[in-house]
Length: 364
Image 1 (cartoon, rainbow, N blue to C red):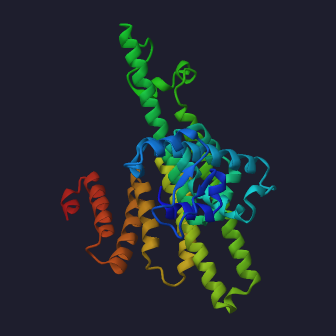
Image 2: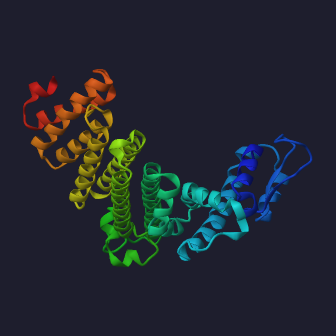
Image 3: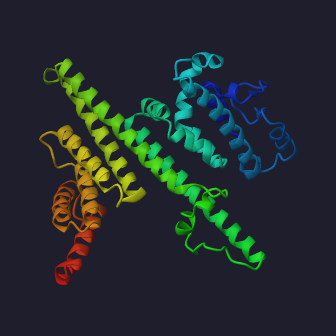
């Protein structure tokens, strides 16, 4: 394991957590410094017995992920269960660094080790969501949480496909079919017998996923309100620094709202179409306020494009075309005619004209 990483882990308090230590035989992070994870003896044995190719050893990496996921989840879960009122005394001044690390990497460790249930517990925990947005920033935290939820969805789908393959293989070995089940995974999954037979509950997770996104939206609205109140209290119109900070926060929250809207659309655009559009509208409003008189900003165009895609998906052609035209004008002004974003909007506009049988205009 890279010794620079070892020193970095020590600085954020994770060396103590994983029972690791650096041999002080030489000064500075050189190749003679060894980093051992002492929580599992098998890891140490692998290091001693297989020194060649150690850095790329897949088995060892899996073992490390297993240790990381177990240790981080246990301590973080206890911290959240205590309503975050208790500190982590064993880390002393590194407590904040440990929380920061957990907010950024805990879900990654759990997913890498296949601890999908534990990952879901954290992802749906409102206290963890708030902690994550607080420690990593509203925009970055929103992006990471939505990304991790999407990764968990993919992992659950893979696990379901694996489970279904095993079921079909077992049935084939016994020379009979799966009575009453279709060959389509989701139709098959809706059968109650399958839900109690070890198959991952994907449909229930998607409902939880949506609720998590609603929690993020609520937090973003709270922060937007706090920014507005702080601006009034500090007399923002007489303070250029406060005015700039207020606009920056609004822009960041607007970007976060757009990410939430896109994530809702990825879950189920038909069921949650209203909530998806609401997030886009809030994103557009905040970005418009953030940029003030300068509305020719690519970030605003990005939201208009997302709204156009939403309306086009439901055949609201007039609304979609209006959004696309505004986005196209801004993209051309800010990014130039040859930018990918311009081509992307023109492509969608062409599809709309083709849908209306105006193929000559669509080809232009």
